[in-house]
Image (cartoon, rainbow, N blue to C red; front, side, top):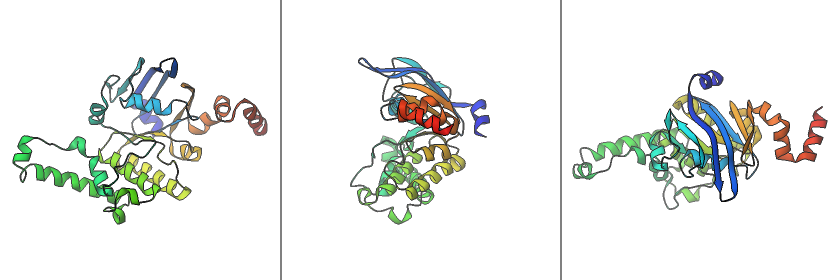
Length: 271
């Protein structure tokens, strides 16, 4: 299904992305595309350019060259808040939850792009604004059920375990009803059971909410089990693309992760 979807319609097309910070080239002519309904993995060693690529896609960085086209619209120079309104949502490598607020309140913040504030709705609160607030609250309550957060919905977010905080951040991203969901290492710091929960929620988001997913992840077991295709970055360059097991077995990828000598031993052992 994923390969056919990829061939039929591309949700995201990145072409020849160049990004530099002074004399440091963070991305070097990176190109890839993601098809409708795919879970696409973006992997590579630390410092390979994965988060820089995501920041280009979401408008936090402006590339010096290349283009980013999402849903057929060129968003290369678009500001982050405008990209969000086009159906793109993301989580961050480091948790970006609001301490002092409850789980429910944090998830509700994900609805901000759908809320209609203004002078007239405020003036006629009981007619317009209240109706809008109730509708948004209903969607958040459905997400709380979907992510199995009912027991902690009213807890301050900083008091719950890391695995549940990651689940809350995913719920907040889903609250925006994204067509393209970008997850930056959503399983970092988790134990095996917590990783399995998040993996299941990602699959459910794809199947039940028709969400296309770009996943940055270090855990190779997660990548091979979840992703339809992957791209491997090393020092800002794409060194392999394709099905997860094929791409990860590429000698250049093994070398990037293990070093040349260890890679030679790995290839020798495999032979």
